[in-house]
Image (tube, rainbow, N blue to C red; front, side, top):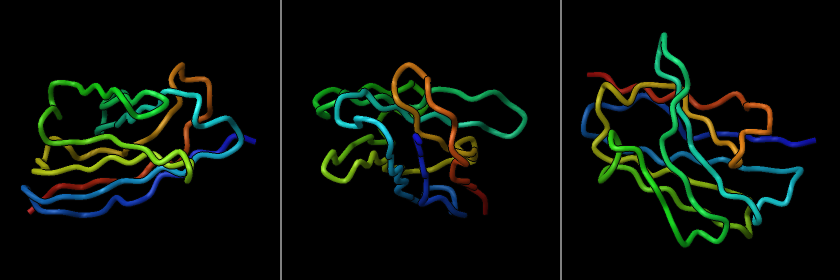
Length: 115
């Protein structure tokens, strides 16, 4: 049974920071590119960041570039998203997913940026 369990979200003021974690199980985590997606209120899921299997290459969508950092620890089957300088537009439910989108979405973790 493949499981993706996201955590680390919360309420933060504009300019604040959060670190999200996703613990994966049920598949060969270290062989897959991993991604972070997010779903803002009333919108479809959108890609945020990608990291290669060994963590050597990362890619970011323009709206988070320079503020977010994706990383992974294959010994812990965990992918992280460090988020700095958060803005109200970053408010969303954040999800992890292996490249290819073949797994069921987890519950995600809510990030709310508000004063």
